[in-house]
Image 1 (cartoon, rainbow, N blue to C red):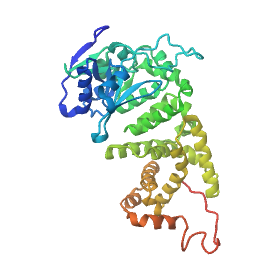
Image 2: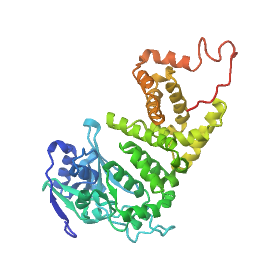
Image 3: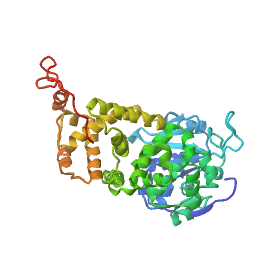
Image 4: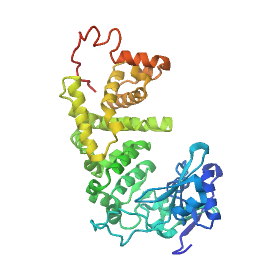
Length: 427
């Protein structure tokens, strides 16, 4: 190992807490003559006594070297950040194997000479890889053979202090990649850590840089804030730092206006608290469509409140979702389904069910109804009753057809007579 020596901390983890296939990847790389370590979030969570999820590997092997070692069980992905995915046929397991990198100092974009990183394929040594990472608590390497933590950035110390701190100047790190602001929020919220004062000030100072980040990355990070079991604190921190005003000004303005109205402001945070409860209870978050629908419910409801018919309401919802989607690249699947999800949630809250319960929309609508009921401080009894309904698959198709007005009793039966303008849902 070249470069400055790291601080070494003995760390023996019970084998049951380690992923045996991740260890297999590390051992095959070291047997082939390369350095290889478990890195990042898994090491952090192991040290905190939390259940580690994603076991990533950093190595001195180049992506092509990893491909030669694992052959058909490996594929190379990425352009901005090339790495290898090693996968196993059993259990569908896949591991991210990244080559040690260093900060691309002197690598300047042909058009833009600012600090925003657009190419991150400058390979380096282990110590350079550690110091180019974003936060000290994510820059810890685990040497499995020696059972030691390698720490070049005082990350173990910051874990003990329970603080999120960037590696190096936070102003520079957030200018290099503004999405790191979201990551700071995510780690502080999930781990219940504080944020270093200098880091917090830099987050506020550079929040507008998020408008320059890739929109799909921004959308994915917003979803990650909602998925991790700490949605309530995550969104509060995003609002408190002004980050929310950059990416979701509709929601930020709603919270600003509601700051003196506990009922209005609390509806948002009670909804987020219910998302966290569901995530903890199940061990997995609701569908992404549900998460986004719950997050945007209040500003969209405010936007569509003047609609008089279902058609006007649907148009208003679609218009606002499209506007937001232009800013944060909401995926088509989610954007096109939000109005249907809101309408189905209203029916469930009113105790009305239909064939949609047997479709993928049903469970999502029930989850959203549970979240909005909690937001409104309403009873969950009717929602619990509907959640308990199991529609046999054989009944799904005819019930779905009836729900859409086909057959006897449909709204357009008898040659189209009996048509009426349906009122807009009040959600």
